[in-house]
Length: 126
Image (tube, rainbow, N blue to C red):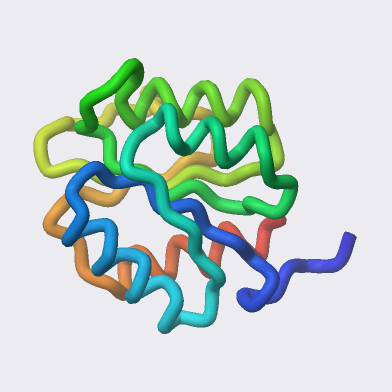
């Protein structure tokens, strides 16, 4: 498979805070990626089960529901190994091994260039 360009790299943004989710989606779209949104891990899993075109999951770690972002990251890695993970949090300290192999962690408050460069790097690796 040829390297994905941003235009055909679909990013699933998982964030329970509607304003943060909207901001992240806007920032990622402005960088040339396509975006779909989920407000929690359960909704994210439903989207992943129904679509074959999601390439990257950008998730908050601290979320209500049946699983937080770390559990979601591992569920994605187990069920959809080609999908790349970028996780963020203002509360959790992530250690090596907390995220699946190849996952990226960016602490909140993040700068848009941190997220965009991680997405470009991961999209190029697909």
